[in-house]
Length: 146
Ligand SMILES: [Zn+2]
Image (cartoon, rainbow, N blue to C red; front, side):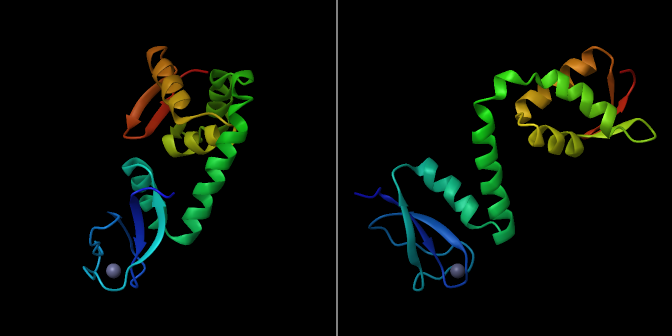
């Protein structure tokens, strides 16, 4: 049987979470008449992440699912790829003419190569300590030496 948490979609398009048996009203427009239960969940945590996805614009949603799929298929071979090697490659490839590099570029690169954001943050941290990167602003660095 289904869980006790429900995800209900309002006629305005917004998804709101609730508990079975309790009245749910839309968090966006406040209506409690036009909500249709879309799915049910066992835990509040599952519900919460589903609400987040349900309220994403359609194109972001499919990108999001793609990313989940990708990270899952990569995870089995993740051990074979050394994140620090990808990182060195990334900064040589991504640094612009001013030797600047941005977090968002690194994130895309790391994602493409099947690494997690944690791996990336770790590599950035090490590179800062080693003097390879110098922070230039929030989310950007100057590549000093590589
Ligand atoms: Zn609504």
